[in-house]
Image 1 (spheres, one colour):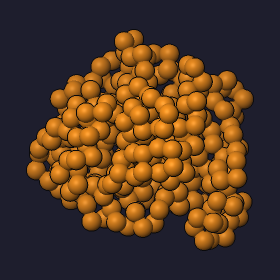
Image 2 (tube, one colour):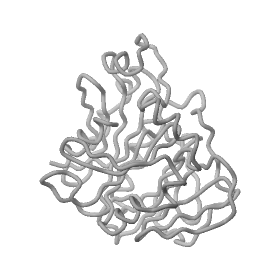
Image 3 (cartoon, one colour):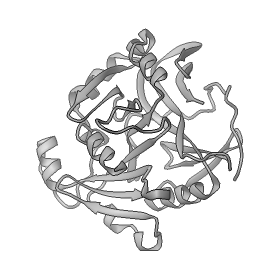
Image 4 (cartoon, helix red, strand yellow):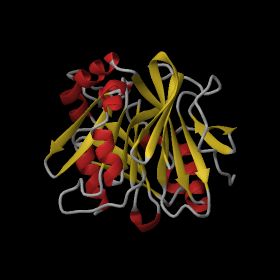
Length: 290
């Protein structure tokens, strides 16, 4: 049942605790718009189910309307709120966004994107019994599987038919994809008029068992640089990172924050939106869900 959610969504397109009062500062690495040569995977989009109160607050927020190119979409079978960056974007759903279904707030999906044709086929998936490789006419997808066959993270690669239909460019087996090849060019261009540039980091709340799977999965796809920040582990491909907030009390693997690069420098400020807050400082922001 949960897998259907990812199909709908894609049709558009160490134990420690971190401080909840942390502010973005100069020590947070700002990520350039283009992924560096050599990186094979980048962020594409992230889906997070919000509680109904926070979802309504996000949709109706004047601050969000100025912060990011954003809008609510009503599509066949589901609706959600989208914040579009230059090369990646955020989706927010409420518990009943999927027609006939109800999902727990905190439910997530992180979709990464391969930047090289046939890259996913080269990975040694056989040694990890909790990942699954699948293909259809549009994408090849390598998914991390956790308890109850839920896949919170997938890496997607464009196939020939989808690439040529979407980008209007010729496909060949050694092609290097651009991050924006997975997105709407019109929406990506529109984002340049807003404060939000791109998501460059994602914080996850998870338990020790799931953290081991996430670490091994990310290492397999090319996120193989490790560092410590405020007592948490960051796993990076040198441009973008996933930050692990590990605790035995975390029953649900969920997103607890987005690290966002801004198009211009701003004064330090905090904006409360429902049961979340956005902390801005300089050219970065942290959107916290706790």
